[in-house]
Amino acid sequence: MPSDVLKWTLVSDNSVYAHLRRALHSPAAPVFTAAAERLAVAPPYGPPLRGVYGRQAGSVPGFAYSHAFKSILQGVVWDRRTLDVWMMDSQAWVPGSMMFYKQPDPDIRRKIIAYLEANP
Image 1: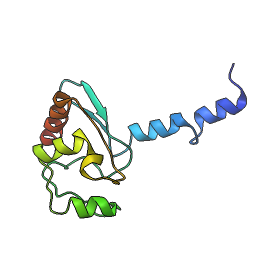
Image 2: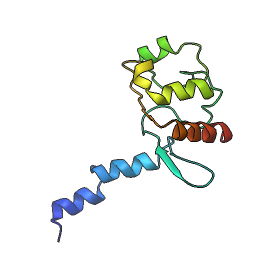
Image 3: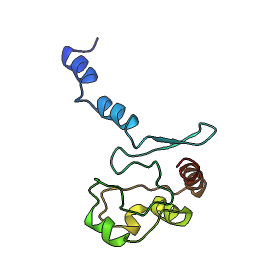
C-alpha cells in the first residue's frame, strides 16, 4: 500500500506523472500517422506544431525563441528538407537552441514530416 505522501504525489500537480500528463495534453500534442502509429511525442516546450509546415522559423507570436534559434534560422521556412535536417539533429544545426529533437531513423522522420504537411 502506498504511503500518504506517495498518494499525494501521484495525484498532485507536483509529480513526474502530472508533468507527463500535461505534456501529453499540451498544444505540442503527440504526432501520429493516419494509421494511428505513434511515431513521436512532441516536447512540451516550443511553439505549437500545428501549421509548422510552410511557416517561417521563429515566427509564432508570443513565443520566446532563443537568440541562437532566431539568428541561425532567420529566413528559414519549414519544408520537407528543413524539417528533415532539424529532426535529424537540431542541436547540430542550431547549437544552444532550447528546442531539441534527434531522430536518426529517416523513415520515421519522413512519416512525421508527411503528417505535419497533411495536418496544417
